[in-house]
Length: 445
Image (cartoon, rainbow, N blue to C red; front, side, top):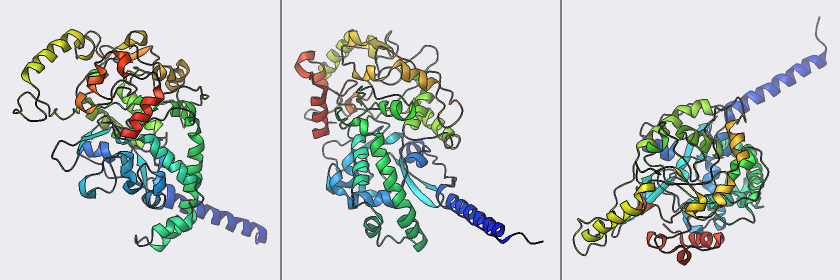
């Protein structure tokens, strides 16, 4: 006995829908095993942290945006380089440091990683190209400018298939990929960029982050932890991730982040990845990668300073031997207690009433944020966090690589070491926004 015709039609329709769903998953969402980057520096600079589903842009859209919308970048002629990202000399790499390319389904996607912020560079007198400092303080990077660029692009009426596809002419995309971009990826990306603009709307009315700084936890508080906008300002200098072995020892709690809000180095790396979009589905695929990065930053050290007492007279990097002797004595008398490994206050939290820098970064991290992150379950079971804490001060950190860290203090409010050692009232502005604007305009490094 034959089934009624309508049943056969329904079955065929369901089969067709199921086939489309499977095809869409295979083309756009299927996880693809990636080649392991063996070199730890390259893995840090270009490796994926599993945030493609949350933050990834299809590669060719990412490639086209600065060509179509250059006016929304800090320097229209410099593309993504205007954000302060390091790009290998002579464009030897496909992406700047701090961005990864990972294929999902059949489409490569570009996402930020840890090195987007934690990268440094320097150029000595007479040198043509800058030298990359992996894991360095991101003194030239402007993460907020990248967010604003994407938000403005997404809200521009010109953003659409015709505009983006015209920019891709001559790039050799096969017909099927052009169809995917035109009818699926570009419309979906436009919606995602509009949604991201709404997600970061809380930044309006607060001081700009400026180059070399970021508000690392307010985005997490409001998006991941579901806390209400409390009006706090979390702007803080981007810290280098060098030689954190001492900071991650278990024999006594050593504070990580400016205010010591966590004492476990792997939790710091994982929570940073979550802040950048890593989700519970991706975590099993990137857990080993994050563990390798943690092992690397435990031991990675900055390059030696070019300033030396052994350089010949007239060398711009020569330090007079007598000045070195005097400076060492002053350091031991006034600084080593807090900043020298082995000192009694090294890597401990110094109360804000004692250190007397502003409270903004400290007050941004609340007891409610601590409690919610320690019980974080978004996307699946408990992530296992346990080491988040609330403090009332800022951590006395090591001074290695100090020549590469300027501007100084947790909020980047002092431009040079010379200024830092002057009486407080003579160099530090009472207005947080004034220094933000100064750093943004000069790109101080």
